[in-house]
Image 1 (cartoon, rainbow, N blue to C red):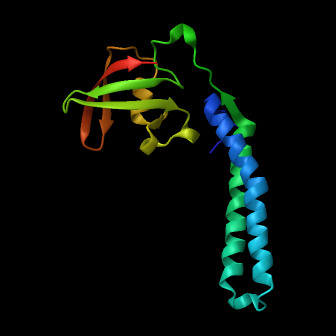
Image 2: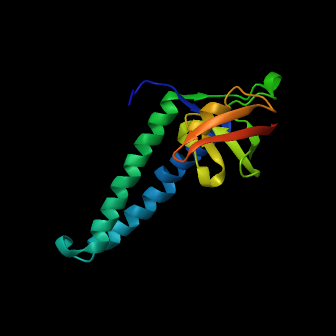
Image 3: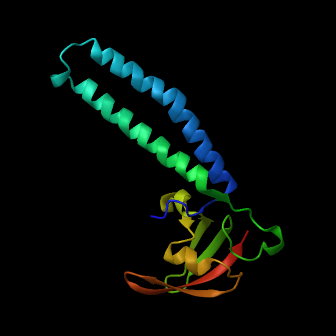
Length: 158
C-alpha cells in the first residue's frame, strides 16, 4: 500500500472518521483503562483473562486510531459536483436494475474506506462502482462477477 496516496472520502465519511477518532480517544480509552485497572486489582496477571482481554482490546483500539489518523492525513474530500448531478460520481445515490433478474438495487457510491455493501455503500474501486463512475441515467453497464457478466441499467442518479 502506498502510504502517501490520496484516500477519497465523502464529506459524510470524513465526519464519521472524526467522530470515531473522538470516541476511541476519549470514551473507549477510558472504558478500557478502567477494565485494566479493575483487573490489576485481581492480582496474578499471568492467569488473569480480564487483564489479557483488556490489553488486547487496548492494542486494537490504538491500532484503529493510527489507521483512522492516517486516513484523515491523506483524505481528499470529494464533493458532489452539482453541475453534473445526472452523472454518477463519488457521493451519488444510484438506482440500478439487474436486467436479467429485473431486480432494482439502490446504492451510494463512496470512497473505498467508507464502503459497506450491507448498508448499500459501494466503493468506487469495486467492479460495480468502477463501471458506474461517470455514467448517466439510462446507461447499460456490464460488470464482471464470479458468475459471469451482469448487465445493469442505471435508472436514477441523485
